[in-house]
View 1 (spheres, helix red, strand yellow):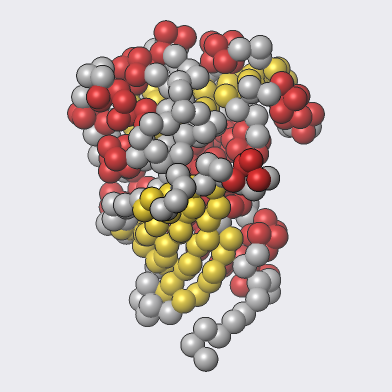
View 2: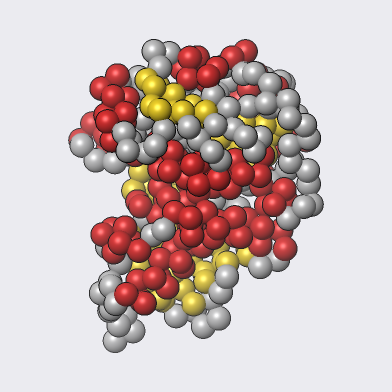
Length: 322
């Protein structure tokens, strides 16, 4: 399935529901997701990240390549391909470009966490970063909360202005912030969406009742968008304990500095959704979803795409066993 095939069938609300169910099934036994191990690429600073899961009768793997040198050559930093199998028979069912699926499922995971953890009347969205992931997050968060105002910041003012122009028909007031602090302090829900190495968002800026989706940093222990004080002040929910303790620069740095303990990273999103662990305890609490990105999100979304593509007669069929 090509990127255009995927774009033709994806519905964001359906992806949000699929991602929510996948996280819940990790707790209830309907999905599996082993810990992953990143493979450094000799000769450069790239990583290959295999992400394997089974969910809802489907099984598969996404192979993610994180290549920091790509943008200088006009290519995306991250590229991925997804292979789907019938988990009952092992038969290969689909080969998909991963770019659009990754963007949709990432925004969907933030929407699921926002619905589970933020105050229901949250109406101001703060975006740190203004690229394609920011546009996807505006659409996704608006599905679960009554967003009326968006305050966006980008290192590149032209990118922020382009975001404002491209989302003019969103029904929201779009404001461009001069500083990341301005965007954070104005918001009820904050999404960080950059591949930053050094913290952009500082815990001293946070106010009571906010919810943060920490999303953009790649799976590298030295990359982080937020400082340790953000984690110290918040009720933290992770997408996966394994990824939080092996690949998240934000959590690993905070642990190394002794600002938080491993116990503060013990709650996974699926456990909140399944009612096994509590989410937000009170209106004034600060909540934080640490999103590194996990395989069940990709496989659940890819399986959804497969069903839609087959029903619409899209894609190209190839007999691999000939």
